[in-house]
Length: 302
Image (cartoon, rainbow, N blue to C red; front, side, top):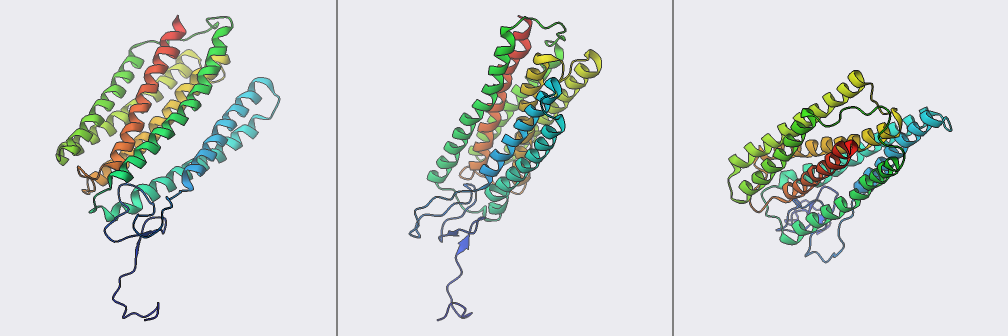
């Protein structure tokens, strides 16, 4: 029979979100869009979206740095940095959106299949590698802060950093890690109702943390006159806390997607890859916050 013969009883091969053929008995859900084994193709799927997101992040960080440099020294017009940061942010959001759609949203319609252990391990390992590289992003700003501390310390005007607000925010973020952990544990035990409840609680705690950080910024800027342009320490403080807040916002978005899919019954004890990867990311963000509090908040007072 010809390829276009409608009487051909063989169903067309299924494809994942990137158009790759998936063999019968294997679904793309829960372990992303990659080529399935068994069709003679041993190549792993390579998504372009993480690269696009990384390029956007580089543009965003570089733009902010150029804007600050231009404001402080006048060597370059600050608007050049602002424009680069805006373009970088747009590219970053596009990359993240495409990545989420390709890996989690498009495959969601095939949620009845069980993920293979190999695919789950591959995605978890990739997430760990991504987080390892993300350490260097924070590390660069921590190195900058270390150079700031080499000079005269403390700065002439250092606001009261350690207070009840940062303590409450820290408790909220730590609590969110606990609720996420037990949400995943409930899913592995097959208790979907408890899983959905704890996952929703994690989402709410993440939103409350972001609101608390926004309020802290307002208090510093409006009440203390402490802003991004308040010397080298102000740049380091807002650079580190702002970068962390951006990571928290991304995590909140990912958890919101998990909640949306959980309400539709897309997860189970053997279908938890995206839950496991987002959980790793969220615990990483919480750990970075503890380091920030110890080094930037408490350490600045020493």
